[in-house]
Length: 567
Image 1 (cartoon, helix red, strand yellow):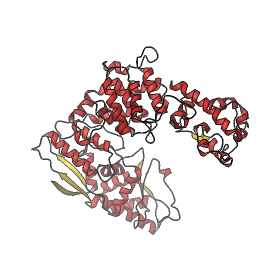
Image 2 (cartoon, rainbow, N blue to C red):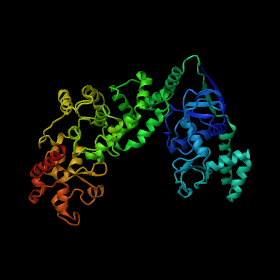
Image 3 (cartoon, rainbow, N blue to C red):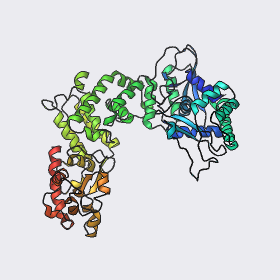
Image 4 (cartoon, rainbow, N blue to C red):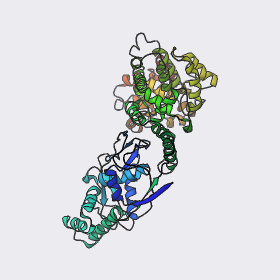
């Protein structure tokens, strides 16, 4: 059951300022970008519908159903707080927070250091133009010729200032006169545009009750936990439209509904370990995996899941710290850093360490002796290197679905070895038994079946990745095609190197390899280049008519480098 009431935007802004409208802990962070916020203000001034707002009302002196946080004025995250008794009645927004947050920031705050500006020369018959910008000088000065603006110049005015002036004056006419006079506007058409735009702004913000608020009634006969989950389910259904929540956004909301401390837990872990690929999705998966459950349906999530995370917060944090140290010591940190790599192998290293019969502090320090007496480091390193070079966890072509079949089968095996040595042979057996594309023996015949991005990482001494480099044909494909070489041989890692985009797309583009590398205008230090890119030293095979000999020789150099690192 719900009651509807119409509000003016200005009244809602006052209520948000006074913390009468707040955000329950189950709400996600602000996700709208500047473009969406600007468009919302255009929609508002046009009088178009932009949907209602749904809230739950908590009475004065009551203990609220959820912990809560105020709206942000600058787009930055604010932590929720738990209060036993609220000082005045409050409305907890469960649907429409992105819109309310946009109005609040646009009218009174900033986003990424930018304030909202309104073009008072907007063509009020077609489009009201708004723009977030950090400096007035960066705003556009003149519209393009094909613009529908009737006045091609812009007249930008701070929305913050306009909102304050109209609120203080109470009437729009004095504000219109003041702006026209202060800027020395004499042109009647320009005066008309300023007046009409300010009238539209005033009407939409201060005069018209254009915002519908629906208040959901909570049945107090149900216990607190049951009511929380009813609201979380309502939140899930309401957020099926609008800006979509991912499945893990919803799981996070459920967990926060059970335990408000989950919000700070998720925020802290993600802020500390996001550079190694820890996302909200991966963190939630890890929480379930550590409890021996690789896949939990949302309806199966219980209070115990949130309690597990909070009770084991220090151990989980230390486990993630240990994972980061492992990546550093195994020279994989650069591979994972700020890249979209599969987190699956890290799940199982984390699982193995978390379930060791050692203290939380010892978990954090587990790899401190990685190069002396650590019983697991070299074994785990070998497992992850072989797994990555074979592409066991790549999204396509691995021979299974990594995030479904892969996780399930590996978990079924590794959970049998808690507080034991890392079961490398058993995990390799899982790959082979399932028919995953996996080999422990590398040769010139299977080199192109290995995972290319990790191969490049090893080829370039674990320093370069294809994130910032171009994959370049050493011998140009246009020349090789003309000489009728097989397409598969042309597009082989044996004929690939990593080059900076400027060189690849500019001075080297389609040039014969020997001609290019022998010209010191292009390659200043040929010896260093040969060593770095694993180029066969025999210059007699550097020409395209010796392509077969070149790639055969280079394949051996690649295998030597890769094998040395993997083993």
